Length: 371
Image 1 (cartoon, rainbow, N blue to C red):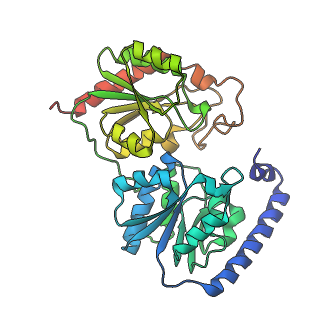
Image 2: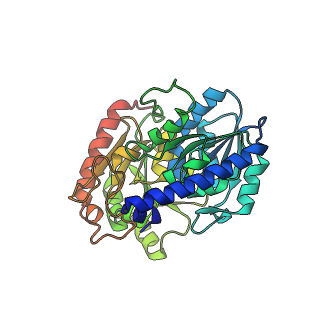
Image 3: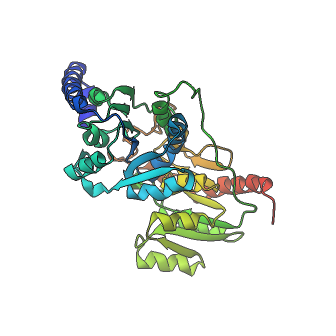
């Protein structure tokens, strides 16, 4: 169990710990501001997985409009190709997960020095966890803006809570709203559909963690059925399948596309019509490329992560422990704490998924115009 969740059960302990950390960090922040940098660039801290990198794009666009100048994005190297799909006038400073200690929670001196070389006058934190707090707490930037857990509030000059009450894109937009009142309500744009007809369907059977993955054998059976009417391929990270499973898939005359980088992933998605998969980063990358997507959900809530627009379908087998409307994940933290049965995924049949996907494809075909 996470320390923050343990403390949440003891209100007085949580209050005292938050007060102590806030006071210490506030004092440190005041000290470093004695040497503040006034004439430097705006640096956005965005240390995310692939899917969350996509969710930050709208907020970054709003921040760009506010400052109307070139920005620096400080991010993991794998996020840069994603940002380049949409963002212009951006300089990238990249780090790797190996530049952080304790399961990617604490920034190394190397990472902090790299941020210091950016010479930021303004830092905007779109990460909102200990990882970014440990990176920026000793910065000499004149102003630090962002979201984080309450315990790190003392670092920020303009601050908002991390809130999992609505779509994750809106959570990042809340940081942009600290800068300007011109962002009102939901300002999420959808990428226009970039396909003229339904030709190639790609299936990506993996996710950020196992509990979000539908059974691989069921994906294979689904591919068999869809291949009767469409060209179907599996998209997988390099060396992620055993030889016997690869041979089984190929025996059904279904192609396997292996990718070794985010650039290869993007290039492959650019050549498909529909991506089918679990709640994962490739679904969100496909959406900003203008591809249609269909997502199979289990322990996570579609209201928080489904791509916006009518070109993105999903199916979730609702059971008694599925996340409620105001929760991003189920009570087991999306299965990462362990689950007795994984019923939400195991109970979803190929027949159910196939019916929903065929209906989605049929509706999508009405929108597309044959070449």
